Amino acid sequence: MSAWQPITGEINRKVLVTNNLEGRNANGQMSHIWRVDMVHKTDEPEGPFMAFDDSDRRIWGLTHYAEIPA
Image (cartoon, rainbow, N blue to C red):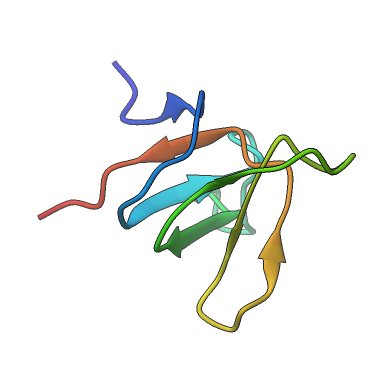
């Protein structure tokens, strides 16, 4: 079972998010992963879910989240 779950609504805690489950870097490791404080629902065309990264840049088109490992 994958740790990644579909985003179905706003998330009000720190989680890992992705907008591309299939994205890989040159080493074959998963890329397109961010740690965010919360996930917001939006009506924007890039949506339906977005978040801000640590640099306050918007991350659009989020599809999945995973809990941050302890």
